[in-house]
Image (cartoon, rainbow, N blue to C red; front, side):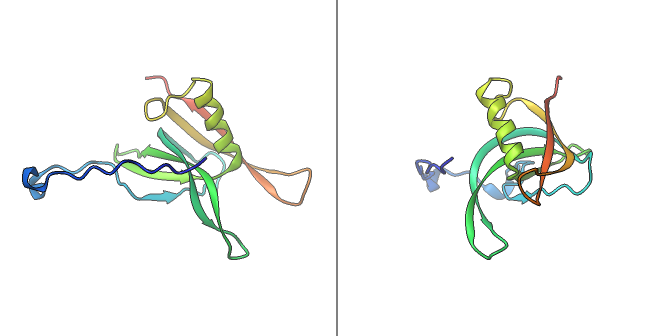
Amino acid sequence: MENQKKDLVLTDLNEMPNLHEAAESPRELTSEYWTPEKEGEYKVGVIIDLRDEPCLTEEGETIMLPCIVMISQRQDKSFETIRNGSKRLVAAIESALDGGEVVMGQTPVKVSFVGKKKNKSNSYSSDRWSVRSIII
């Protein structure tokens, strides 16, 4: 996964309307890293991106971590932008996108934290996930 630069197109400032009177989007552009703590925690919304995000390791080194980015709807219908870099979650979303089961930015999904499972090959545990499309 590689971040792609978008072509920059500057708005004609002489043609710009009064932005102080314009409505703002309900979507927050900054994102929070979602780290569920309890089994059953979930988010509903749409996946808007898969991208590498800088992450600080326990050793203090910065690495690029593949993450999902999701616009998540809260119970009150407001929105938050979240991201998560669990390898299993990223792989599940990539597979669903590649298989056409999820369309980026369009298919509503429910991402649920199922819990942690101890790895057989080392002493660590891996997060387990459920990803389901939502039928409207």
